[in-house]
Amino acid sequence: MAYRVLICDDEADIRESLRVLLTDEGFEVTAVAAGANAVAEAPDHDAVLLDIKMAGQDGLETLAQLRRRGVTTPVIMISGHGDVRTAMEAVRAGANDFLEKPLSSEHVLNALRRVLDSSRLARENEELRRRLGITRLVGSAPVMKKLLADVAKAAPTPATILIVGPSGTGKELVARSIHEGSAVRSGPFVQVNCAAIPETLIESELFGHEKGSFTGAERKQVGKFVEADGGTIFLDEIGDMSLSAQAKVLRVLQEGEVEPVGSPRVVRVKVRVIAATNRDLTKMIGQGKFREDLYYRLAVIPIPTPALADHPEDVPALVLHFADLFARTNNYRPKRFTDDALAALAARAWPGNVRELKNLVERLMIMTDGDVIDASDVEPSAAPDAAPQGPPVVVRGGKVVREGEEPEGPLPVDEVWGRLVAIPALQAFQDEAERLYLVAKLAENGGNVTRTAEAIETPRSNLYKKLDRYGLKRERDEARREEGTP
Image 1: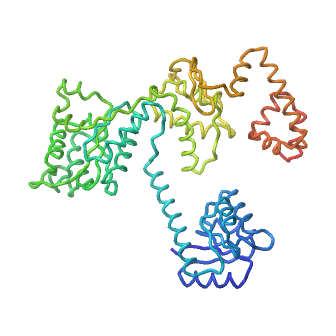
Image 2: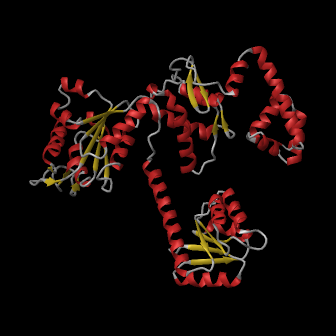
Image 3: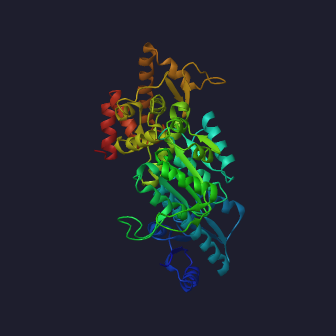
């Protein structure tokens, strides 16, 4: 399918010459003379060529309107008076490239191909991440810094790695990060959940089988090790693997050879092996349930993944990361978590670890009304047995501060005020001060709630709640009538 390109220039000769050039190159072209038309047409195109100097609405204002509306179509700005300042203005406004008149056919085509390729790669990357559920490792606590350092050291080597940690701590994400940082990152990444495959079929899945080698084997099957040849195989929950399959995995590690079920031949493979488990394999060795020789082959580099309870200070960053990821990948309206909501989340025990936190964040994004998620929204959504894990937690500026842990330097004004208003006598003073502040701000903005909310940097729905809270019913009703809000 041909790329669709929109040309916006108020000079008819330039529009026509660009249209002929791009049509001859196989593009589908639409040409308009005004910025307003470009704003309407751009979402249906793959790229825009936009002149800066135009009568009426100029190119910079047109570009600003596109970006304010969330239109991400790549835009190449065109100027007859190109200078560094104009180019910087265009880039700040969201332009993807910048061309000067007189236009060269070669420069136009090269710029178009550049932005189209970049846009295509970004879409493909986002789609891949959405399909695979790939996210990045998030956290700055000491245990997470050590994990990131371990991954960085282990990834470039060919060593076999054993990732150990409780369920929900991101072992698959660690494995993918190791693969992406390895010498075989251009090869396949093949994941096998050993716990999800019946014991009678796991050897067939891992090593493949010949047609007719057992009842139901109606065709030949290539095993996962052969699929992963030249790349990485990730054996998740390897503690659930049978002793028979363990012996064959050991042979692959020792000899680089795979023996398909029912085949008289072996297949040589070169595979980076990463295994993971939430079990105590050393205890299983003592019980005769796991091969000791395989354990030492796998655990050349052991990497532990910490439970979320070991780094609660990372909860705010994880919450904001998951909220942003959910909004972007599902085209969902962004929502803001208050510091109180983040503190309530950081105080939970999280037996399901990061996976449980991610699921709760998505539930809050979907089920919470309005654009702000507060502590009162968190409590009903948390698991019934998710009791607080320790001392009270305070979040300031999106970072956890535990009770008794004083930050370096003076406290911010909002934190000092937050501590003062915990005194009941001062709570009433704060409420009255806030009520008078809202009345004054409404008056400054002519009673317009939208402008007032923008002035004090709060969502309009939150401002309406405060007007109701402080009994400002008349101001609220008059504002709604003036703005036509039901």
